[in-house]
Image 1 (cartoon, rainbow, N blue to C red):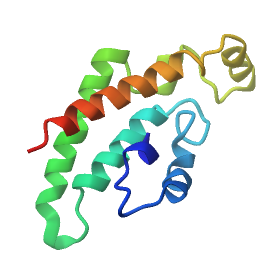
Image 2 (cartoon, rainbow, N blue to C red):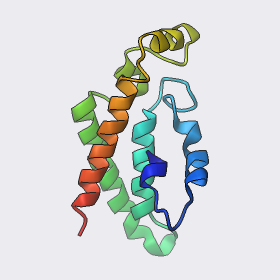
Image 3 (cartoon, rainbow, N blue to C red):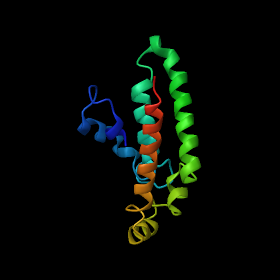
Image 4 (tube, rainbow, N blue to C red):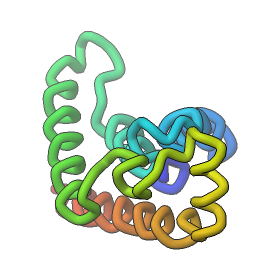
Length: 129
C-alpha cells in the first residue's frame, strides 16, 4: 500500500517496500496489531501531508485529521482496522497462521482489505484541491 501510494519523486519503490515491511501481518507478523494495508495507507498520507520539520507544524494536525478520516472509513467498510479482527484469528500463533493459509484468508480477506484501503486513499486523494 505504501509503495503504491508513495511520492515517487521522493522515494523509490524498493526503499518504500523496505520501510513498510515490518508493518505487515498485523505489525511484524504478530497478527495482533493494525492491518498492514491500513498502516501503509497512513504512511502514504503522512508522506504526502506530514511535517518535515518544526516549520511545518500545521501539517501535523492536518495529517492526523486525514488519518482519523481514513481509519473511520476503513472501519466502516471492513469492520475493524486490526488484523486479528479482520481475519477472525491471530496469525501470530502458528496454528492460526496455518489455518489462515488453509482458508486462503491472505488471498481473499487480505486482498479485500488492500483493495478497500486503496479505494479509500484514491477517494481521499481525488478530492485534493
